[in-house]
Image (cartoon, rainbow, N blue to C red; front, side, top):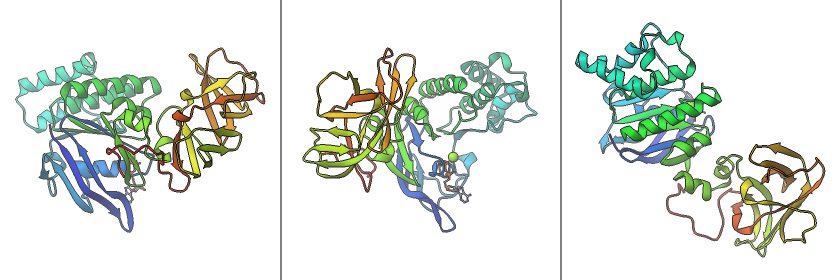
Length: 363
Ligand SMILES: Nc1ncnc2c1ncn2[C@@H]1O[C@H](COP(=O)(O)OP(=O)(O)O)[C@@H](O)[C@H]1O
Ligand SMILES: [Mg+2]
């Protein structure tokens, strides 16, 4: 196990700066998720940690030791990728055993370790098969077993669930969460999927265009996104983001007015989450904090209904009771409590609530 630290690490491809310079720490035993849209530099960062690529600048430290010049095989890491990277001619058993053989572990011990790892990912009865006879989920579990068969100091996982269908993604995600916690090995996990990041991470590092925009626990990032980009990226659905202006604590935008905000005057992006607003019945008096607009669509969620209305230059989603009914075009009123609102600068996107941001943020 190890504490991983990146100090001012950057990567250029010709004139293009793909990453950084960025600072990042994964504490010993911590599960850190690098989250961001495609192309933001996650894989590039991961490859520099693995030693598959050299950094253009900065240092990668494992337990304080500079890794410059140390090849991937000597970094004591285990990697799991989107592509399973199994050897097609080897059986499941032989695939899982591969890293042990490379390390010339005692044969008897090898067999025990392979069986234990296969057991942990539910593949104990598949050991004699070749990868071609397995489903995608099983293949990824072989890759997972191969990663955990020895205890490395670091797991690096790059979009390991991307090739799986929705159901397998959930079960494999649970395997990953359970096994990494059980083993207590430091893990750096890359994904563009906010739900994976929220469910797996001890700490999320949100990246955008090669930079870190926020670092925090899933809860911190969900509750106080540092900017409109993070707000619009985290949560399902993502936070509603309306455009408008604030004057004397009152936000006004297209078909929306919200009073009682603790923010300075100016052009803003105002955010709130679907579950924090409420659909009002038509006969209630004006509340001072509401959206009034025609229904665009209803989406049945099973336990609730998602109500979609256009307001503030956006399509706003609000959760309503599952018994809620309305027709497209019906006028809908939605009350948005001011203390559920997040205020971001319209130009920079940065959070501009009066409350001081916590120190864990990446700015
Ligand atoms: N070998 C390379 N040569 C040139 N550009 C690259 C190379 N690898 C990645 N890039 C560019 O660097 C950026 C970050 O890529 P990547 O780290 O793969 O993003 P992510 O994994 O977040 O989707 C992208 O714009 C990508 O096109
Ligand atoms: Mg990638």
